[in-house]
Length: 259
Image (cartoon, rainbow, N blue to C red):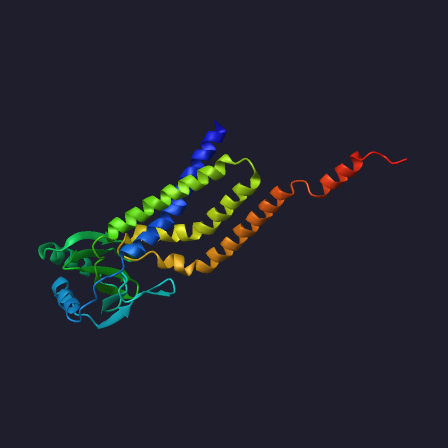
């Protein structure tokens, strides 16, 4: 019974770990080919969503997440930001919610923030996101993800989960400690990326790209690959020479004594 539960736990762990990696790969693949941001449309939409507020500054921001610059046609590569004074004006959230609902915006939902929550909505291929921090309020207008983005993301997650469940189930079936050690190293190496990915998803959903997390962790993953390869080499050597010097000593002891 305990062995069966252990195998099920390993199967679920593999599905979650590699499923998250597959989700990130799918979101990268599905997010390619995003339409560029037009120069005038963001300002018109900002005036429509917050007509009673005057922004104190604006800037075209190039995509940069976790130390990774996004390509020009990647989802999340560019956005227009509008800043509204200091400190945060929480009344802007209600203003945006009301104007977005009356203006035909879709997908209206809250965005957690501090000192108050913001809102996100989509229309005409653009996504508007209002957030609040201690330094002020910010409205971001960015291109919406291209068609097929969610399908590619879900497909990547399912394929990764299937591969992870299969791999970890095979590892759990082996009684030798070496395969389990390899599985443990893989799990520990992937945990930081998985944790950051799900923190991003809990905050922004799929409105922000999550694959840059894994690009930023690439050096750690390369090191993990080298360690796993080294363990694999040690296992193969031990299989070819299972007993090593002990075999030679045993054979010598069995030779007939010469008188």
